[in-house]
Length: 359
Image 1 (tube, one colour):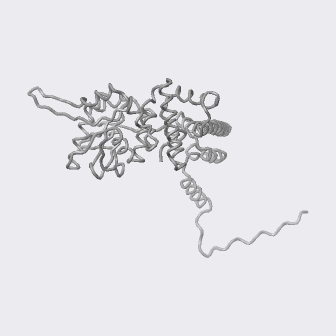
Image 2: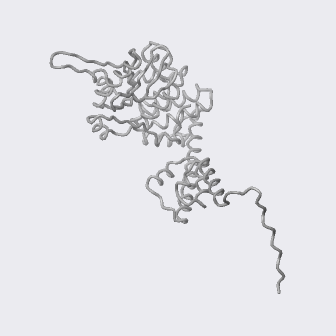
Image 3: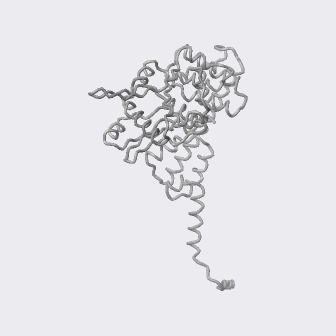
């Protein structure tokens, strides 16, 4: 299942850390990956076969379909840790390391060779490094980023396989016969909002609507496409969808319009529940940390907000409001047992007191 625009994607991020002194300094400067980056990672992690389809479509070559995503943490015996964007296992290729590269990142000159060296040592075989980008400049950099030469002429080179999503290659991804690749076409223009980019996004949504017969998958891919777009592009599409006079009414455009209408109603409902929860907490004098307030504002599931509101009425602390259901039930059970105290065998209940007659 692909990610949804109203789910955890807006908050999702993949943590990275390097424990060597040099790489620790670099990690403090690292920018958090954005939503477009994370959408592709989640899509490829949940459906590894997409990578084989994308590779075949852009290169004409094929390889064994990746079977599953694995732990993307690569460790040394010394405390050095590198986290590629995604690590897959393929029946035909062994390990496949995937990097979604939106911009040039000079730290990858060190981390890519480091990860590959460890994987070759662990697996006793060379795998593949695939870099996906929509920038020609980044593609050119990625091919030569990890090249080193010593003073005496020793050379060390790592040349990844780069999949460049631009120009005609983007058009090739809008194939009704392969509707699952439309997400990559939309991602390729995620940083743009002009007429050409809008045409690609609209076409991607149409291909998704017409080509994916499984409704949950179709809806999920439509949300994923919207999730990777810039705010300016989403606003432009919403304006277009809500004014049928600007675009012919087709099945895809109608569904797109209904999606925005439904999303608007859902957002209004969620905001109302968030405000109600904050009002209850304020009335009960339960103070919120900045992190707890952000947690409430990030929640878009009405049922979850309803549970929090119900708990807030009697909760003694915010930890009880947010506690998972089994944990709260267990605490209530323990508290009830403590209040009743241990039962003694053979102890008779006291006889009921006789009512006294009023004088």
